[in-house]
Length: 145
Length: 298
Image (cartoon, rainbow over the protein chains, first blue to last red):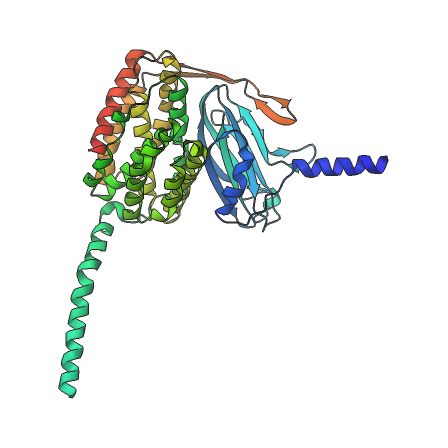
């Protein structure tokens, strides 16, 4: 019974941290597209970084406008030819407050998506880096409902 | 014999030179357009970060459709106008306007009508040396069936994204900015020419929110202010800013909360914003947008 529980938890863990099977090229977007589920695709952001410092990783930033009353879905797909995982954060521009992230500090786990219900229209920042400054390639998809 | 060989060799060289010259000059005529020149002084990384602020036309067109705005093909850029766009400046802007119209037509299910617009987009993109991003055969095939709208929109939107990223990498950000501007202004033109709509406040608010986008568009255009085409466009955009300055946007920050919904982590934004825009301001914004847009597409 204990073994069954351990196996179940392990399988559950696998389910929540998916890796799409695609290398670092335009096909990564196509393979990632189904992950937006029933949301409408808006934009994609390709990311490719070389190895950088663990405590000061190379960081990318994109500016987006989000509209109140809209639900957004952000999905990250990491290329299979790299072992790294992209951490994505959403910040409000007015005070740089972090509204959401794919990284769960309590479990040190990087997830692949989050959804955000916007109640205040404005400028937001997408900030992203590879965990521990590893070299990596990924794509971020933004979708809305 | 030796003299004959030399004569033939000379004639061949002259013939090849005459044959190659005019075609090469035609290609260079396009490349010599100042818009086509790479500018190493521009901060392409900053442009890459900011250009994503320009909204996808799908977002506003979908709002128009859901609000009950009736489709009006008369508002779109006439497909025949493509022959008027003879400079890189006009080609880039109108690759954007036609792109916006294409998305708008697809949102309204007018998929079959998109065929000439697809051709125009492909032709303009080819002229700008970025035609490789538009898989026109696939889009033509998908356009035959209304059920393929989601796929069409995905391919169209991701093609424009790929094209933008490529232009920035190639230090041709000026073209990317013009395309983005054309997309934005056309989308707003469609949104500000609405009649007899019940849920118009939502549309007014969304147009009013473009005030935020406009501030960043002016930054993008200003990166190329030394180009006379861009400086003229900046002047017109500043006139538009004067109208948008009448829109009041306020923001009240509150900490977000996290909820689990269907096993997924969902962040709830508790901050609020309010937009104050009335019909008079909406119409004055629409008037300036029409002036800018009509000059671009003529």
